[in-house]
Amino acid sequence: MSEYSGHDRSGASVGLVRRQSFTFAAPPDELTLESGQKLGSITLAYETYGRLDKEAGNAVMVYHALSGNSHAAGCYTETDEKPGWWDNMVGPGKGIDTDKYFVICSNIIGSCYGSTGPASPDPRTGKPYGLSFPLFTIADIVKAQKRLVDHLGIPKLLCLIGGSIGGMQALQWAVDYPEMVHSAIPIASTAKRTALSIGLSEAQRQAIMADPNWRNGDYYGQEPPNKGLALARIIGHITYLSEDSMQRKFGRKLQENAAFKFDFSPDFQVESYLHYQGKKFVERFDANSYLYITKASDYFDLGEQRGEGSLVKAFSQTAAKFLVISFSSDWLYPTSQSKDMVTAMKKAGLDVSFCEIQVDFGHDSFLLAHEQLTRLVSGFLNRMSQDVAGRTNVGKTEGSHAL
Image (cartoon, rainbow, N blue to C red; front, side):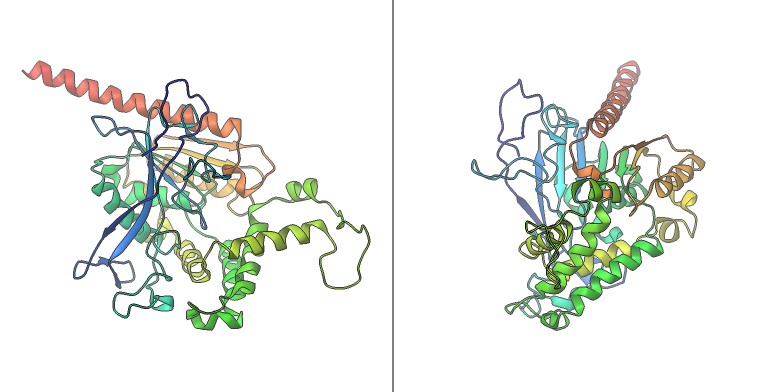
């Protein structure tokens, strides 16, 4: 829980937080994955912010993107220089107001931030799983998260909110567990990965696997495949940006010498920036986790997997209300994919709102402080909260009449 206290907290941080963990599916009761393989025991790292109300009706689930973690807001210590990855959105008086909502952020299976993944010890051998870790899907990620939500004693989630792969999880939740989902906000996401995005993922995976230090995934305790992982991150990072944002920030600006060096070291500022992003990434992420999570996202096709090839049929399995948000400069999951999602939702008879935000920061726009995104999320959550409160009051009134 957040340890922040006080009342006049508009725009404030949730304060000091702590990472928690939940372990389940111990043998012989392992979790059965979509592939038919079993996984257990499983530990999920998670954090919560705000307080759960008496009716347990104000729970909001927030999902991180590919290389994110459960640390969505606040700081672990007073001296932390960097707060959680969505601190600009989650907190008192912010878009996801922790004075109103009980916010949960769970790290996904397969990750390397406290949840069970390829770097975790295999209970059968005591050594890291490596490539013996079973492949999983977005549906498997959600199935594990449901166990956490059940553990927290929450019968229904007010809203599911996530960008990119986080948006895929929100969609999967709504279809797989409709009785537990009131609403969802998929942001900069898609109902299925296209050939372009799958191809980009494969290029990143091949960069990792081509590194001699990868050793077929068995590199733990040795020099990891840092060069391959850094290159994968460089490729991935480019997809998160836009041409306009890169041109505005870098253009063709050269390094400090302002002259070509006529060798293969970085001449341009954009080259140096990408090298820096790759170097920083290998300090915090596991190469095998990157392989597994990108593969899980490639497998995602909600219509094929849950609607016998029809996205309309898939969405017909839920009654959740949706707010779909895209960004005009996102070329990884462009607005056209969000519109396809919205069209299918409407044909399925769902209550859905849609907005394309005009901003030139690319796919990563959902991670940046943006007034319109904050306003949209806050307004939708308020409407959903009032909707739930209205239903609760009607139920109480009808109950009193019955007496």
